[in-house]
Amino acid sequence: MEAKVKAGLWAQMALRLADIAGRPGMVLRKGDPDSGGILCVLRGRAGCLVLSQVRDGEGRAAWMRGTGKDPVPEPEAEAYVERQVKRDPDLWVLEFEAPDLLPPFEAKII
Image (cartoon, rainbow, N blue to C red; front, side, top):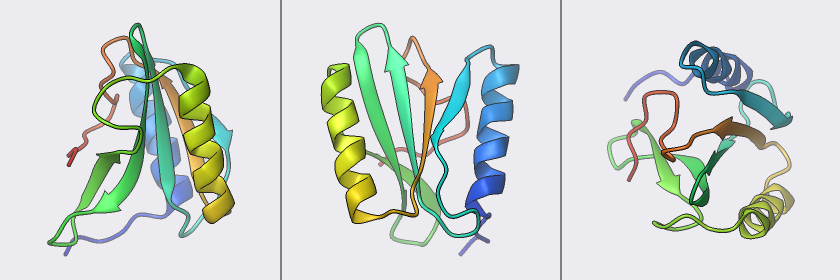
């Protein structure tokens, strides 16, 4: 099992990697700086994807397509984020410009 990184630090790292890759990103919502979960909204040409931070069966960090396999319209992505924040008020929400709908950070998507 790999070590967990504090949510605030992870968010800073993801935004820095996005900046380096030329893919603007921003924090839409700050959650708990130590142990909050993270949602990443990827905005692309074909619509949006929302990735939700999870752990795989072996406890390693991974991402799940919360809005499904295919891109969804912006209002649908926003509604998904709102539902998740109601369930977990400690969530961080980050948004990235991602024309190809790929995250600007290393991500195992399950």
